[in-house]
Length: 286
Image (tube, rainbow, N blue to C red):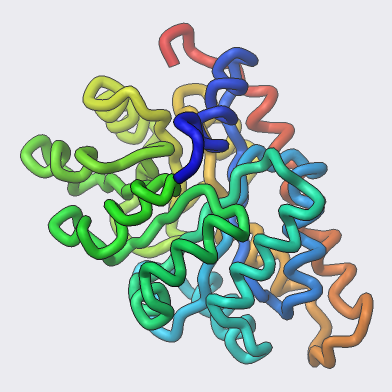
């Protein structure tokens, strides 16, 4: 069992004192291969990442759009597994003990690995939070509550279709932060209408003391800046994954340096997004 204040809670407390939102990039673990993925993840904090989400590659990612589906397939083709994703985190922790790491994925890989075994390995590796998109609150005994007991935050998704009746169940065992999905659909879609997202974030802040992060559809620096004015964190995934894919060589041989231009292109975009988040003017009550 870990200490009472998680790395995620510590980070959000720091950012609140600075009066700004967090920038949270999402990248797929093992995309395009282990070495390039580790290089990218290790350099994201210097590019402005406050927390990092790492995708756990899965063969049937029902909530993901084409970009992240393709990233998952590239990772799987390169031999990525849940064990290797934990190894990515462990390697990252040798260099960085402060940036929170969140694994995002589907329950099947965790279940197949064995929940107890997975949580023990995750704690050892330095995982701080989990987002498991296909485990509803009714299944909290499967992974949510065991994760909480192990000291790992379990982050729940709220969506435009989460109504007042459903919200208490969604929030009951959530920790770390609330992930607000700004659009009804898969990742990478058009960002939700700003006014509606702002109202939804305000509703979540009234219902919970947890920070609220907004993702699914935030693709540009301007999107990020606008969202950072009222949300506690801005999550960007598909735009970064697209940037990686667009700069990869036609064939990958896992030779040293072959993905350097792709990694650098992602880091450049991450820097732009982070700068936009940092420059956003926060509303007084945000």
